[in-house]
Amino acid sequence: MEEKRNEVNDSLPVKSLVVVFSYHHKNTEKVASVIAKVLDAPVKTPQQVTPEELQEYSLIGFGSGIYSAEHHKSLLDLADKLPQAGNKKAFIFSTCGVPAFVYDGERFREFVLKNHLPLREKLVSRGYTIIDEFGCRGFNTNSFLKYFGGLNKGRPDAEDLKHAEQFALNVKAMAEGNRS
Ligand SMILES: Cc1cc2nc3c(=O)[nH]c(=O)nc-3n(C[C@H](O)[C@H](O)[C@H](O)COP(=O)(O)O)c2cc1C
Image 1 (spheres, helix red, strand yellow):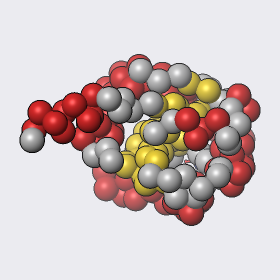
Image 2 (cartoon, rainbow, N blue to C red):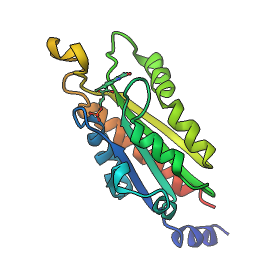
Image 3 (cartoon, rainbow, N blue to C red):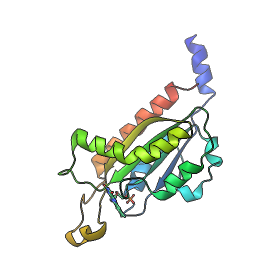
Image 4 (cartoon, rainbow, N blue to C red):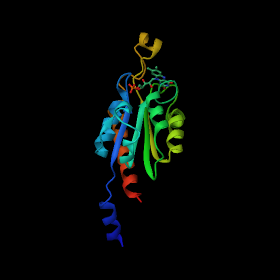
């Protein structure tokens, strides 16, 4: 019985893709690279993919910096155009500019999930199952912040990227262990 299940799993490799838009300081691109390495997935921008071609993948990561409390418009627009996904899995990630003295710990996690809400709703409405979500801080020199050296200098740092790697390992395990 167990052997049979493994045979089925072996014949259905998870085909993964990471879609990222990262422009401010390429913060989210760093996170995307780490995740993509674990998943052995290509990294593409929303502009480099068509909604139809995403149908080829059984696991897709969608990420960007947070701009005005949501993901980048190009990612949200892509999600709007996706065909209905049958039994496809996705994960969401981001970097954001809020410093630890504003939100930390569980409050930061809540802040991340709130910023993810617009993208999450679109993906869920297209039939995607969201496996998990990841967020960390990113260097932020938006607007007047540039005159003060910015916030979150050096982020994402090695520890953030370690967390991103662990997140990807968990996502991989969940996607592989839960295929049908
Ligand atoms: C135009 C603009 C708007 C932003 N709005 C927010 C925001 O609403 N909340 C937040 O936490 N960070 C905000 N940030 C900071 C970015 O989310 C943060 O710097 C992020 O790491 C940028 O990612 P990127 O380098 O991948 O583009 C904003 C940055 C820019 C440039």
